[in-house]
Length: 311
Image (cartoon, rainbow, N blue to C red):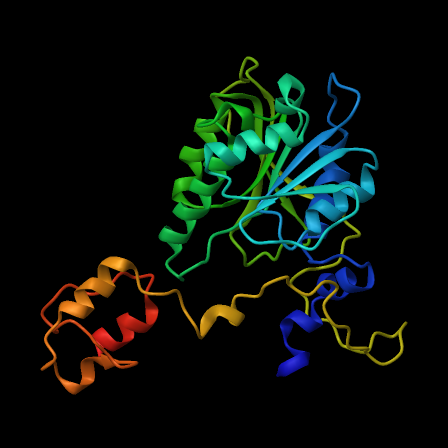
């Protein structure tokens, strides 16, 4: 269907472009903040400090910079991201201790950096196996919560989770460290999606009644648009649908590197050089002789060599 696909008929997809947001996910934070006051979290310091983890392409960072001008915002991601006024960028892995220390330094260091707001709308690449996808997503939420690395502990912590069997264990684990824990679902998040957002407040304070179920809150107001509806491209109040390009093109899209692939690791190069020159024709690639079919396959990071080995 091309440009008339579901995404193009999604009202939040279109609103994001007209509002100059880099992703429709910006409305998730807007609705969470409207109902729960996430960006109005009381702090003891004179400047709100926000760590936006897995930030690219930057939709949530845009909302924070827009709603709280003057806040100290640090966006963290493995991928480079186009600059945003008032937002400092950190390129790194949020599960690495070195990245955690760099974020705390960027936030100004000290206890105040730990009492700020930690946001994470990141998600691993889904593979279509629900249990595996849920586990990977919730493990990312555990890493983002900072329980394994003290500098990432936040006064208010918000992270995407997938609802399912593994979610209960995650919520109970977070309850041991935060005063209040509940689950929120923005109205711009499709009902068919298992995603929701865990919202935690009061790190290190006495936890609430752990015997009660974790509260569930719908965010966004009754007047919010229906994320599951398929809207016509010609609204009654608008002229003909106008196609709009991306608000911000990616700095280095993955498809640019998809054809080349990484160079073979030294260990595989040595094995290749030592392989017999009488290998079957199917095991020659770019003039190199590949190991015999009975040998161990090359590393999974060497896609070209794996294709030759499998063939």
